[in-house]
Length: 311
Image 1 (cartoon, rainbow, N blue to C red):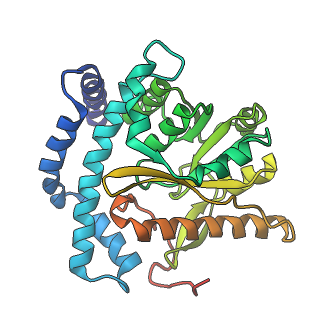
Image 2 (cartoon, helix red, strand yellow; image 1 turned 60 degrees about the vertical axis):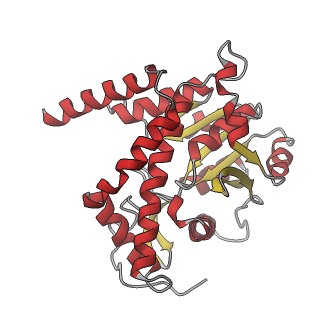
C-alpha cells in the first residue's frame, strides 16, 4: 500500500514538473545539483562507492573514488534536468518541432557519425548499442533530430511511474519504446523498415537471459540479447555513446561489431557480448563520473573477488 502511494506521488510530481514550463530546466538542474551532497547518506552512495572499489581499487585511491562519486551525483542532477527538457520538446515534423531545436545545439555530432550513415545506406536498418553513460536519452533524441526513425528497447512497466514517464518523454521527441520482453519479431519489423533500434546493454535486465561474463575483470551477469538480435537480423551491433566533453555533449560512433561466424553459435554469442563489455569498460574509464555506478551491476556474482585474466 505504501509503495502504491509513493508511486502515485512520484507520478504526479513528474507530470507537474513537465507541465510547469515556468520552471526552466537549468534552474531545476541547479537546484538538484545544490542538494546533491545529501545523497552521500543514501544507499545509492554506498553502492556507488562499493562498486567503484570493486572495479577500480587497483587503479584509483580512496580520495579519487570519492571524487568520482561526487561527479556521479552531479551528473545525475544534470541528467534529470535534461530529461525534463526533453519531455517538453517536440518531435521533427510536428507543430511543436521547434521546441526540440535545442537538442541539435546541445549535442555535437562527431565525424564518426558517417559510420552509422554508411550502415543505414545498406537499407537494412541498424542495431545501435549504448550504455548508461553520458546522456543516452539525449543520444536517442539527437539521432531523431538527424531524421532517423525507429524505437528503443526499454524496461517499460505499465504501472511504474518512472517507466511510464520515460516512455512518454521518448514519444514526445518522436521515438517509440518497445518492451524488453516483447517478441523479437517486433524489433525485426522495425529493422526491416530500414529504421534503427536502440539497446541499452551495459546492465542486466529483469526477465532477459544473461550470462556471467567479465566486466572490469569481475564476473557480472550480462544480457546476451543484443548478440542474439544481431544473429537474427544478420546485422552487426553499432556502438554509440553521447558523453559530455568540455562543456558539451559529443555523439561518437564506433565501427560495427560483427558476430564471429567461424565460432559455434553459443561461443559466437558470448564472444561478441564480451567484446561489447570491454568497449563499455573503455568508455567508463574515460568518463567514470558519467556512468551509473549506483546500479547493482555485480549482483549475483558467484565470486566477486575473483578476477578474470585480462583479455
